[in-house]
Image 1: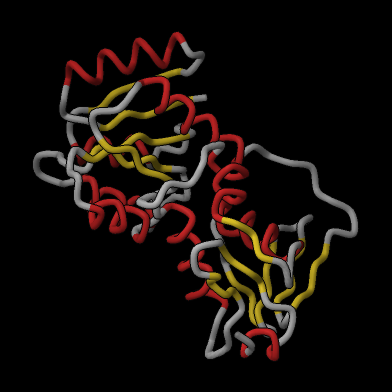
Image 2: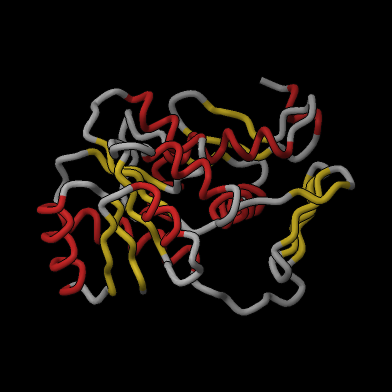
Length: 230
């Protein structure tokens, strides 16, 4: 797998390149934002590790422009402790984030967890789900909400499928995090929450489809009556 690291810290880039190569990845590093964006949109990169703090064009602007042209998975790196930076990255379309300083093994684990979600899978036969006005086809990976086609990212589709297969039951944040990121949820980890938020914006138009069960997780409603019930 080809990993692109965009970070102006040349020493960190060199260390991470050597480490990730030993982990079996092909790695290249760009120190400048514009060149990183050009390389990320070349079509030959499998995942981008993108630093927020870059001279000239920062990581958020790179991600915004990248998402206009590509769905390549992105892990954001941030040296800031403020939760707002992580939320902004996820809102702009990052798949995950990792605060600096970080353990290189943690980065490698997150890369593998995300790439597993993007691995091509054989089309499922008869894999059509219909719940509460939402139709999901696991073979074509198409989603129709109340008669209109909806475009979802790989992560959003997989989360929606898991929720719909468990419609009426509550899925914990821990279960979702373990399945999609291979790690436990923490109180300050907003990755799953932001992907759920994106799903709601794309699927819900006045009706509640995905309920938040405070302190536990999420529930996909089977009927409009379930959505109204507390």
